[in-house]
Image 1: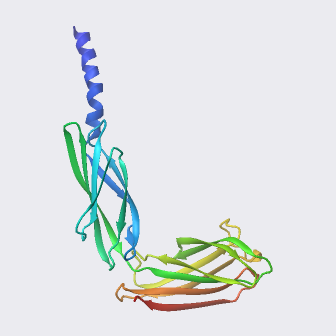
Image 2 (image 1 turned 60 degrees about the horizontal axis):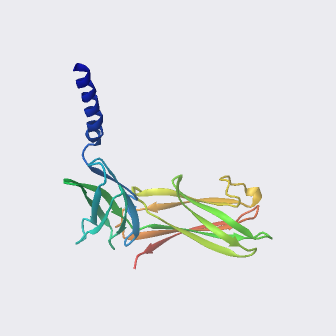
Length: 242
């Protein structure tokens, strides 16, 4: 009898332990911390905890300033949430309501993510091919204060031609003051800039003041590239939104 009771207790423990370990339902939102005005972006929601088995989830999400939420349902635990930023700058909150139902078991919770709506700084670099052969699939990298802001690709640049590449940089957390912009043109994409191959790198400074964020900046960097000796022209232009 004691052995039978011990076996029964062990079986009960195995049956109950997954449910006990599951815990309350909660959601995790991942995605950009900052968006440009009116920008459309996707956020990822991962649901953990809650009931087990075949669970139907109902997910509703909206920005705190929006009137009505978007709704979707499914038996999966990951969802993609498309969000459209408001047309003006400011701080908004993405609010996600999660409900789970399996049999008669129902649980719900709410997850939130803060998002900054910021007018981007337009980084613009002009590249000129002064060589005798075409440059193909050139990797262009934009850095702000030494941190990679983004990349672009020049598909093809013929001899004697020039092209301008731009990147919209969201200055989330960028403090007022002087900042460095660096642009690299990497012909072979190996991450190493070799001027002997005609690859180029140029740096410039720009100043972010304490003016309202609705006043954007365009950083223009004119670069003569793909030649061993380069003439660099750097300009900074202030651009106001229409």
